[in-house]
Image (cartoon, rainbow, N blue to C red; front, top):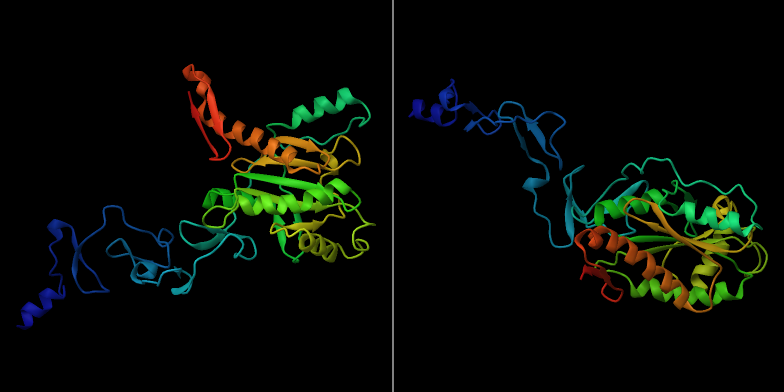
Amino acid sequence: KVTKLCKENCIFNSCNSANNEVCDPETRDCVVKATTPCTSNSCTNGAHCNETTGYCVGGCSEITCETGKVCNPENLECIDTCTFNSCEGEKACNINTGLCENYINYPEGPYAPTFTGNSDNEAETLVYEDSLKGEILENLSWTDSENKKISLLKYYSLKVKSGAPNIIILNETSGDCENCEAEGDALGQFYRDNLLENNFPRYQIINLLIDDDTFDGNMENPTAYAASWKAKYHQDFPSVGNTDRTLDPYNDRGKITFKIFINAENMKILDVLYGSSASIETFKGKIREVEKKILCNKLNCESMGTYCIYNFDAHTAKCN
């Protein structure tokens, strides 16, 4: 009985080395050693490497969490599944793991050129605007109305990890512009109408307020100014009191407000739109145009002797 017990608990080298068996010091069982052994840095989700057997063991793989929660590999506790805006610091929600994960690296340059010409020279501005398309916009960052740091890197990371947003719109707007105010409510509704099932936005808008003297006082307190704008127009997307006028280097038409549309997959500029419209249809028209460009470019219908048909309502495209 003693001999049998020792053998079952793989003591005294009782494992069959001819079958590549080793004694697992954690379970005292004979196991076949891993073909590709783990290393101290190769295990994930809180698991550790059993150097004898070559397998990753423990961690979240041995924990079952209730619906709506996931295992945190850092402390092996069940936590709420992350959402689009729930992650803090430089972390983004990965919808596949349900965890907040570190930002990924931003696309490398060269980046979109800034405008150094004469904004009154129409020929120069048209050439510049055309040169922006297809160029990567550098990683810009701001502090929003909730005192949270936001950046293009955040939304790029969300796109890579969770598949949304598809398009980022930098919306430079102003309190002394009647059309800007008329557009405000419409943009808020447009954003809500285009939330995906998991409440991730299809189109991520960032308001960049540039005026300092007309809307509810002034921008002596940019955070409060942005918060009041966001509340007044029922906007669920970030609003920034942009005293630094971050987009000025790319605005070739001087003081007029404008929008930059960015492909979140690669952070390349799709197009720009100048001024604000009292009608949301102008904005929607540009969204249709740039979304069609993204979807149809992926299909490359022309190479197959067909053409691309785009459906805005379904956000799909096909070759015909």
